[in-house]
Length: 518
Image 1 (cartoon, one colour):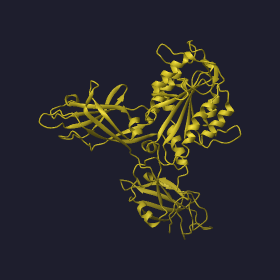
Image 2 (cartoon, rainbow, N blue to C red):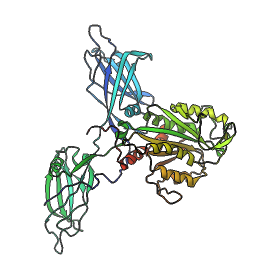
Image 3 (spheres, helix red, strand yellow):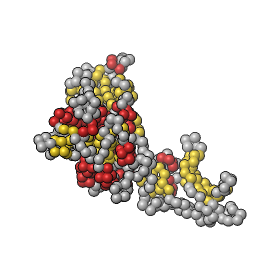
Image 4 (tube, rainbow, N blue to C red):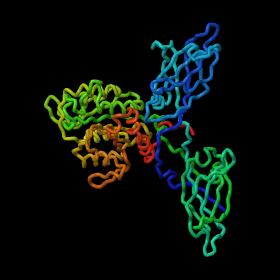
């Protein structure tokens, strides 16, 4: 059996696999200018990593001890599971080892740093001062944390053909197909891929196919691969034609057209420097009710919250870690504004149209609470203006050669929408841009219109019939999560965002700003 090897004509994988953003991340730690707790020599530091579980710190691991060293570069790495849609609080604590100590607290404390894993990932390399238990700086001590994804994202595209295969069928030629098997650590063979069957030929050319390198050979280009050729029979008694063994390395040497490319993940883009730009749009229409009355969806209860605030905090506290300056535009729609009381469908809730940015999610919450007494709820409920507002900024990033920015609009609404055709048109146009839309429905209204915009059941079309090039809308009704922890709402709302980000950049062949080494 002869074989030829090649690559798909465009060198790319054509299918987008569902991507649940749970992956393994390796954290490397360097400390500098640590406090010197030893009398006769320098400190002997080690680092302990904790993560927060139900309000308690649980130890994940420890580095080795760096003897007599105030500027340690720890060789032992920490490995943690990364979940984009969760707040993962970490604590890096450094201690000077006391060989007589049996409990952690008996070692001398050198300082600590606490942050969310999302902050480390979005910065890739984070340098921060160490803090003592009393909140004061630990001298000039500092910590540097570097994150790296622990997954092999390379894919290989192959085209195979056979020549002069054995004739196995009595009344015709063979119906050949191929099976690819990799050799496991126990030396047993495991099926990896099966090609399609080509009917009635002794000179088959199978369709190009793409598989992850980790699946084909565990990422080891020198690992043995066995290729078996069979003649397909309807009764399942497939006739063996022949086999050969090879490796990815040998195939690459035999044909220059064997191509191994990197299949970029969401973390590749984030670690590479992509910023997730966050804008909030808030529904101030009359259907929400008078905010001074407890029946209103905008009424702030004695605990200082309502469903609008809960939605802002649940989503914002996750996504703010992926924007370095943490300044977010917060816009309202459907209200009459002073002094002339004209209706606006796109206004800054801080009443500063030239600078609608709020400092962090807490800043959004403060601006929201402060604006309520100064506006009149009115209508209609128009989404299109606020979608188009964010789309204008996303359009400016359309020509980016590297994945630098991706825009996210969170719309919180009571579900009654007035400009459906214009909204459909705006979403279809936004689907061509680096942009996603999250809609959270508050109250108990009929959200059928929101579910239609979500596009999960069918492809969203504009009023003229143009199809959205991809699904960019995620809708979630808040009422489904009223009695659940806010983390549950965030997981549901943000579940599709990593896939939407990677789908956009991969479809347009836009690489990360800084790609991780192979």
